[in-house]
Structures are given as structure tokens and as C-alpha cells.
Image 1 (spheres, rainbow, N blue to C red):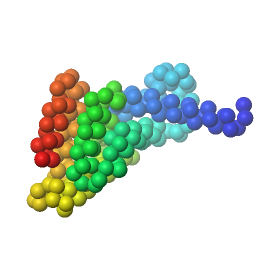
Image 2 (cartoon, rainbow, N blue to C red; image 1 turned 90 degrees about the vertical axis):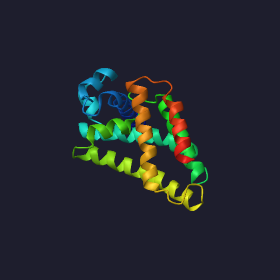
Image 3 (cartoon, one colour; image 1 turned 120 degrees about the vertical axis):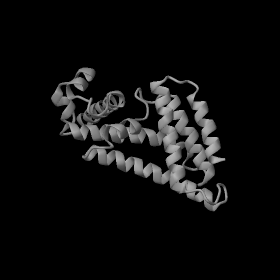
Image 4 (cartoon, rainbow, N blue to C red; image 1 turned 180 degrees about the vertical axis):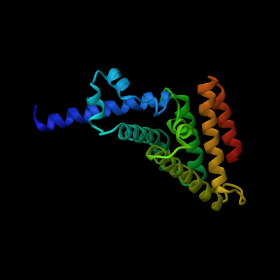
Length: 198
């Protein structure tokens, strides 16, 4: 095997490990992610699973990063070119609801799961979750601020408060779908968004 094809195989193996880790972590949490479990799922040795990452923590971080990339691909990218302000904010909310509806990951929204798992702890994973969540809230608040300046939302709207409301709604939708199997929750979420955004 040539060095180039060897690199391709190594990259494919690494990608397969990350994708499987993402699926498992969405249900079992990142602490529930075990090297032995992944090795069994993928037909690899334990060394073959951890080798491309160097440690379990680096594997966890790679899986979390992939989950964020997937969220960006499905929620942000379809609306990124919409006009900033209310049009994009509404687009984000609709894409976010669709993300939940299609159950992209078996355990629902990865950031919601990871936030609950790591919000009161220290470490690199907690920092990664906080950073991703902080960037997303900032993104929501930025579009809310544009909407306020453009007169699309009431002048007394607090953009950060609105971002908090939208984020809370999405987290609640995740719970309604997974914990209660409430198939009507997405439509209720859409009505709530319409009320929040006028």
C-alpha cells in the first residue's frame, strides 16, 4: 500500500470512529463513550480506536466538534445568506425545529445533551461546550440586534434575552420529542417562535 492510500485509509478510519462516537455520545453522553464499546461497534482493536486521537478526551473532543459541524451544516448554512435581522432569525428557528424533527442524532441535540452533562464540571469538554454555546447565543443576539435597529422588533427588545428565549425553546423542544415522544411539539414550537418574533 502506498503512503498516499495509507493516509486515505487512516483518514477514513478516523472519520468512521468520530461518526460512531458522535452517535453513541448523543445517547449515552460523553462519559458513556468507551473505547471498548467503540472498538466492538467498529470491529477495531482498542488501540486502533484511540490511536488516531492519542487519548479518550481527544476522541471526545473530535466527536463534539463533528456534532457542531453537523449542526452548522443543517441549521446555519441554509440561512446564512438570508438578510441579517428578522428574516435570518426566523430562518434559523425554522431550520432548528427541522433539525429536531428529523432526529439527526438518535439522542437529539448534542449541545443540549453535552450542556446538561458538563455545565457544572471543569475541563476541556466543558470549555468546548461553553464556547460553542456562547458562539451560538452571540449569533442569535447579533441578528436580534440588527432586527431591533431595523425596526423589525420592538425597540425595547433585549437581544440577549431574545437569544436566551429562542435557545430555551429549542432545548425544550428537544426534551418534548425525546422524553415525551410528543409529535405535536414542533408545531407548538413554531407557534411559540411566531409569538416571540411577532
